[in-house]
Length: 357
Image (cartoon, rainbow, N blue to C red):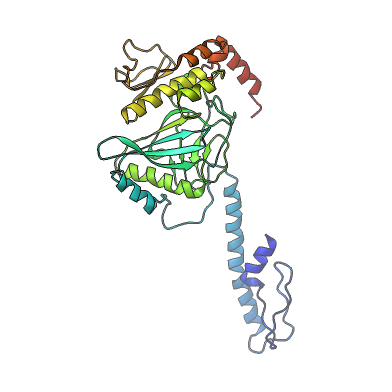
């Protein structure tokens, strides 16, 4: 760093000799005396010149110090040079052409689906018939943790569930290039006492509880979300899954303690695929309810009102007998630990981890 300042400060450029050769590089801050008396400048004039030339040096040091202090503020802040306009991402021409092929308006609403096991993020967009279709798929560069929901601050898990992204969750000045907050914890998470903050989808390809994309991918994803908001969409639904919600995938994870939670997520996934519309999401009795027959605000921790459950949707696959039988074989305490933090096993895990992170 010292060498950098020594190379760039204007007061490190001494007067030339009459031979035209520069003196050897000297220690930072030292101005070598001229080897021969200058032909046209007096000592008084040279003194004034040096004093004025030191002003840019002092100013540069102060600015550099401010940048260093600002950078210590945390990973959610960003040190960046002033710019004429805030970044908003950019939707590329091949994606715009794909919209035209799929009969989609550029400003139409979107929906985001994430699959951990496949390391995939999908952007779905509404076509002119009002239905949502897959627009583009992006590889997830990195997510932290393993399959399963986020339970508490510091567990380094990326969240799973149904979330809403609003305009105030967009961060164009993220330290990870571009980012938006997933909205964790939502009403369902809070009803179970789950904790965590700043769980993002962002660029930078590094993650501690987030879904990290490459900067190139995030540039377009952010641009698609931004254009949907400018087109009038009030919130973008984000569906985060452990894997594609097929009966076969659930069967392959039949012994996992998260299975009851994942079967609940599958109900929401099936509702979306069957109707080609983002499902209406409600929370009561500490569980998700999709496309409820009732509307209004519900207490996430209180029993569900009578008649709130979704009406059966034609074409929606029900959990297979194999899945149900396998889930029934899992001990009750183990089955609920993943999504009911009141379970004594989950409480013991939380107590043992408390203070570690």
